[in-house]
Image (cartoon, rainbow, N blue to C red; front, side, top):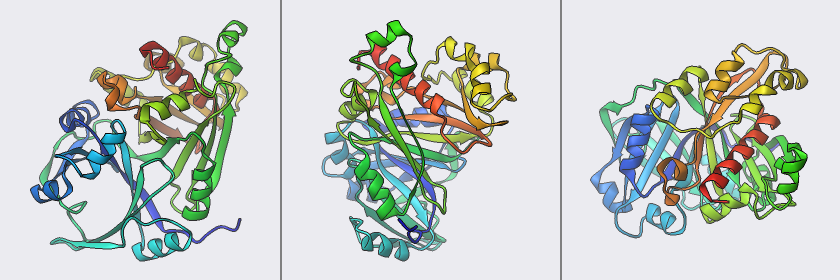
Length: 389
């Protein structure tokens, strides 16, 4: 297929997260991961939208959290069907009218026409569309001097709370889980104009010992994963589906059951120095998915086998902090770690299966098949430990 005209996406700027308990989210973002509370919804928006919202920021990352106020609002409708989760992804675009025209011509389904809002600084234009990502919608916006970040929000004169001590940068990518992902891949290609960037498929039993492999015949995390990328902005989506023989027990399918539908599994946030960030997060009692010591026993040989060779970091420090490493070329690699999902962090199933990844890229733009396997084995162990598999 010939490359489609670009939508003019500048960046994925925010997640809109619907939650049962906004105060719990405030404590997590401001106290645990040192985001600043930048804005809150006005009373007029609370009344009109039947939800209360707070915007948290760190570096170029924004998370807008909303909880219901009564019945009938978007947050209430989401939480009536799902646990806490990402209900909207917000994209900045260069030209809102062009993006709307292209999406409509290609079969996108607008929820609204382009709407225009103004404040003392200027204007903001925005519209939303439905997607194959379960009930998650995409919102596109263009700012022309608009100061209030989002319509109906009131900026704090000075952001409250965090100072971005962990030096978060941007949203590196979003990962979503599907019972069947091909419709989403075709939609991203033919409607959004994205291109395939990377793919992998495996079953966690593939690399297991013979004894463990036998025990996993009817269980385990089989998956196919395909990453789609916007050629202009570099915005990336990793997309997963279960893979036989253990479809039902695959943790992709477990996510689908816990989410009560397809949707966003996690978002990856970049940092400048992952070792210091993770060390300091652990000091604040942030909980991460565990990595077994055997991963680090094999790491030096694996790095040679995949062509990375030597790395700057001390493997003992990586082991201590349980940080993963992957790559594909000499001296070019990435480091990453995954927080526990919200249900595990809060010990509340209705907090949902969404989680964050922390990533530092050192010359490698990919996703690391070895770490994909390590992540899925880690999720699988956590689900078994908590009785959720």
